[in-house]
Image 1 (cartoon, rainbow, N blue to C red):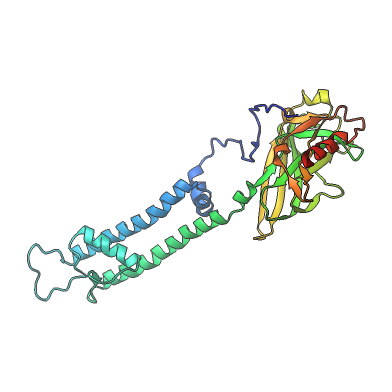
Image 2: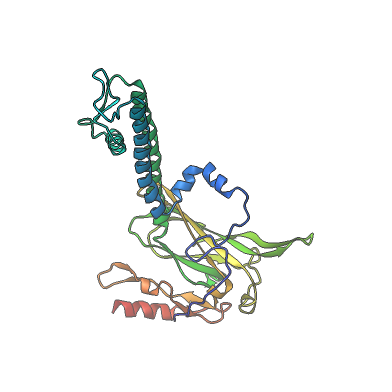
Length: 340
């Protein structure tokens, strides 16, 4: 059974884990971003980062080219006629701003010196060259480091972790549970996986204070613990809807009227790099199906190999009243059909 996906307008976190909260009327926002320039540069979109990378080189080449041009101009190197016989230019064979720009480029890119070079009689030009090498070196380290930091972020790895579009409510091991399915789309393992949840809903305190978004922790478990040693197969995590649950008293009727959002977060460590990654999604009442269960996604073929068929990953099937036990006949039939 496939369920038609619904469009939901208001939610704090989108299905792909992005923050939907808009920040307005913050005084000095630009100053705050510039104060933490490293994070600002790392968080830049790639088109802006590539523009910054190119602009860093071109602007430093041009800026120091202008400085070298004025040094030569102040030294009297640009004589309209033949210079005096005892005149020593600061920059040899640099007669125009274009020549000064090319000298700056050759100096910074270390592809000189040949035709253009600094004479020994101009301390100011020598000092400017040293300053250019030091300052542009620091700028290149910063920009290159920001590139590497953005490439090394586990954000892209988190995009290969898939959450089920639906959450379902059914019986699991004799208890009424809310279940979500998670899968690792890569062959490389994710270790020390832990799924946690936050229930976001309006709340009124005992003092009468109204809170538009109140957060309550929601625990998710597998069979006996809340931690999965490694995520190699598509797995279902469940939350027991008992008296200790913040969703206690949830029913098929109240699910259609309650206003809340369930934020689900998976924290894991990448085995290949030992870096920590986090991915998240959210479920609103329209995306929680009462009396349904996930269709099996793991099968064994005729050769005895395990096969995870993601055609069934988001598919659910009706299970009837979750308060009543249900047989596994349909599951077994589906597995037999797959083997054939």
